[in-house]
Amino acid sequence: MIVNFENDILPDYIINDILKDSNNMPWSGMGGKKTDNPNRIWMHQYDFKSFKYVCDLFTSNEYKNKYQVPLTSGCRIELSKDQEGCYLQPHYDDPDKIFTMQIYLTDSSVATWFDNGPVIGKKNHAWWFHNTGTELHGLKPLKENRVTIIINYVNDKWLDKSVLA
Image 1 (tube, helix red, strand yellow):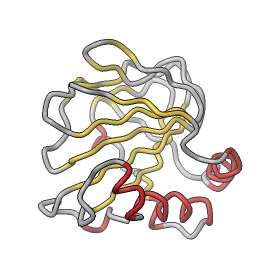
Image 2 (spheres, rainbow, N blue to C red; image 1 turned 135 degrees about the horizontal axis):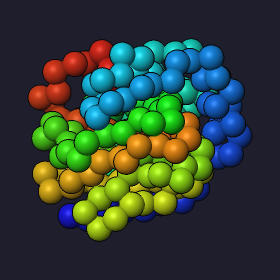
Image 3 (tube, helix red, strand yellow; image 1 turned 120 degrees about the vertical axis):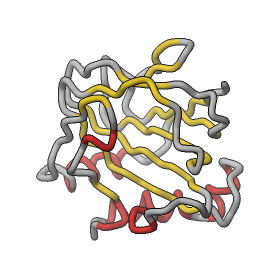
Image 4 (cartoon, rainbow, N blue to C red; image 1 turned 90 degrees about the vertical axis):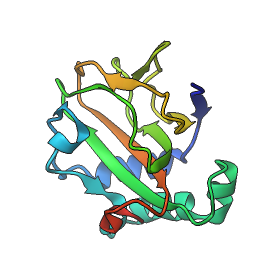
């Protein structure tokens, strides 16, 4: 299992605009699975410049090349507003997800953990991996609300095309 880390993914003004633009959007109440959340926010479905910036960046061939995913990959970009108390059971990603990244837009004292421990939940820091089926990860109950962006590059077997940017 190889988990990579990256800092300063997005310009600060974009992060601030995303937080402002999403202020009135609902918080999720995940109780063990991401699919427990009925209020998922697919960024390409909203007409905010800040959201468009992120979608354009991660659907570009430049970024697909940067993260070494096929240019034909679909891209799923979710703004995740997780409420205090939310958690995710340990899980492996769906095999049709070929890449997963989480970018923290706010600091969080509780962050995603992998077999070797938790990552740092710091604003504008990210972790990512190429999905090999060995990346067991989860989330202990949050001690405060947090906002992150989850980016998945997916293969052509991904069924729900409506969530792709």
